[in-house]
Length: 197
Image 1 (cartoon, rainbow, N blue to C red):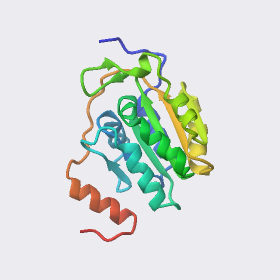
Image 2 (cartoon, helix red, strand yellow):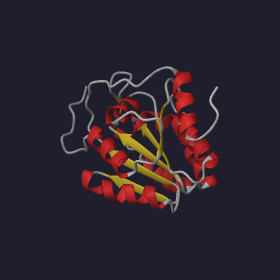
Image 3 (cartoon, rainbow, N blue to C red):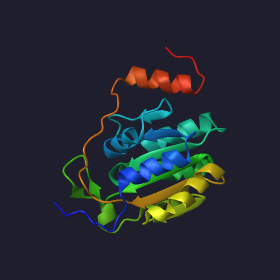
């Protein structure tokens, strides 16, 4: 296993800061560490933790953004998961939902399967892929000081956004959100003012 790089961003501090800056956002989190990070930042009805759907967070975020055009939608995902869903980036860019922000917490590793190096450690740039797909806004974030600029982009909703955030490759204590899918669905629907069942 590679040693963590100290010059990268603390992922938990970054996620907590983003949520504080965008408290009204609907947030979909991908499998594993992004869900742990989101829960550690503060559980709330507007968080939807996507359990067991590797590669599906961005697609779910797209559907939510199209269904709720007046709301800001943030997808928190990892590099490994987003690499599994590259085609979704093309679909998002074709739809251009200005209220959708994809935030990739990129530690360059597959954190849930043993910290093997991911393709982003081997030369793949998700920011470049998103640019090629036609995303309206691209950010590559290597410093926590860039957080206010990202939060401003999320709030402005000018164009669909992909932010590749370079975080430390470190094993943090798991902060496990609820796993009851019916409970998560119903409280998320209630937060949207929709009927629960």
